[in-house]
Image: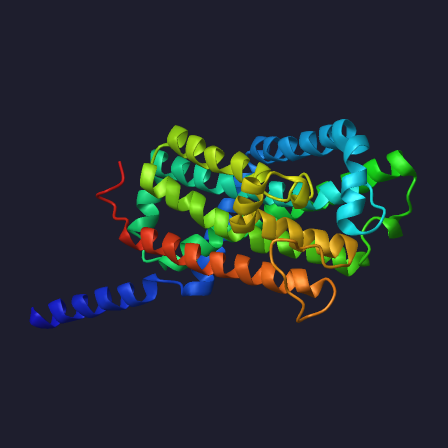
Length: 304
């Protein structure tokens, strides 16, 4: 009898040991689940891309003619407002994509899927990473669309060749996509934290949108920072969007464009890229750790 009990106990222990798939496998499982969920609801991807497209088209048409002088003066060279604005819209696209991450998590909480994930032996970090990677892949596709549309608008406006669009070429365009990815991670983490705190879809949408639009307009996104009121410049210097936009803009123009920090140690556009990516990377690490902490703190008894 005791032998049977010991055998059963051993089998249970082996089951618990092998129940987990390992960090990489757990990440892949979560990534695949969220990708399937996204493809089954293309409406979300379409709507989240519609807002940046509207901003890109309307802002270039409405403000292009009156801002190009200020843009050229700020950059020290003649520049179209389209090329000035596209990096900002890239960051806005990443921001909106990251926003929907928290909303998707609330949907999981409300339909009970989150509870099932919590009681599984999955690594909590893999749960967050897999979900974040699915958002990153969607953001990459959307940024590619924005970059393409930006060139179409530039060509229609000035008939400019492709070489006048991204000064740093194909590598620069890929770099802009990479900046969008690095930028999106911290806000993805933040939107998931908000979702875990509120556990309500309406509250999450209101909270992330209250952050999103003030951050966009209190930054270097739509106008050169030196033409903004002094109090806005102060906020912009602390605003992560400024660093994301400036990093993407440095790759677009192939030069140092940052005005909120005076850095001269690296030369050229690297004077913008290095400090901007350092700031964004630090935010990614801090808020990513906070998101994983909240996932670790969550328990099935807390999920309603």
